[in-house]
View 1: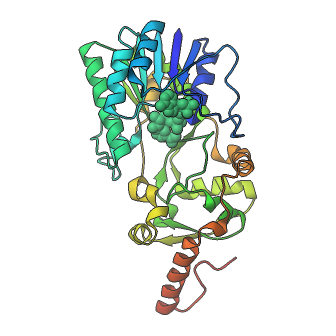
View 2: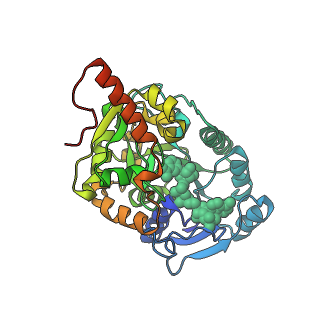
View 3: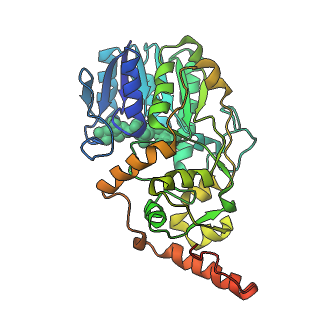
Length: 347
Ligand SMILES: NC(=O)c1ccc[n+]([C@@H]2O[C@H](COP(=O)([O-])OP(=O)(O)OC[C@H]3O[C@@H](n4cnc5c(N)ncnc54)[C@H](OP(=O)(O)O)[C@@H]3O)[C@@H](O)[C@H]2O)c1
């Protein structure tokens, strides 16, 4: 098929483009020509030969829509539809297209799960502007599909990593924790890091998305997209730390305390990672058997960390002393209540 990818050069869309080509599609990208993860040394290959790039900004609605209508692609994968307005623009741009694949997010399901496992059809409880925008886009596209205006498939990825600019942790998105682990410093976690988290490499996720393009049984469906394994945050941190060949020293603290003491460091904890995230993956297994996640964090961590180090994207542990101050305060409290070894004592 002649497939356009809106985006195509970022974290997840790098994997989507590779897989679309492997499936034999004729691929065009639409983006601003700003993102260059290859030049930034972040692991992505240059845009492959034979892939056409149309330069433009999707927010320039008239030009974007006119370009898409003129090109009359068979199918479109919109990687960067974030709002109802983006989705309405897609409906105008892709009327007559056989298939639109839209990338939403599990963030639309909110923080505390309404049910476990969380399903694509679980109640939507978006908790921030990002999730509210995605949920509104999903609604616009579901209505367009129901009206028969545009056949749509929706993917809701959980955390997807591979070509990104940092390595999140249970608490938040800043990467200086990686340098703490490298230097043998303890890291703070909540719920003893025993909560379940889901993640997937961008190449695995990209293959799942690309396999759905043009597939009749995927039309009108919504798929949660992540690995099958039930893995804890402890696993997550330890797999990344395995690149350094040293154990992670965890210091446990109540989630409420961490969020209050360190609001800027605990965005993910406040939003999602203080609850178990277990997802229903039966629909994707049923309809997209090609999706067989293979790449583990432990396998990919050494190269990922080396790339981020070269790009200067893992800040020095000393760049934020908040974690040390919170750990010292917890130690003081523990010593006051029950004298003994400091919680974060080096082994
Ligand atoms: N990564 C995750 O953990 C995760 C989890 C759940 C959902 N998602 C969703 O997955 C989707 C993909 O996210 P991603 O971070 O991997 O990004 P991506 O789609 O791989 O990369 C962004 C792409 O969009 C292009 N772009 C950005 N702004 C543009 C604009 N105004 N007009 C045209 N092109 C534009 C960028 O190129 P230029 O900058 O050159 O324009 C780049 O090619 C997003 O919808 C995100 O919400 C991601």
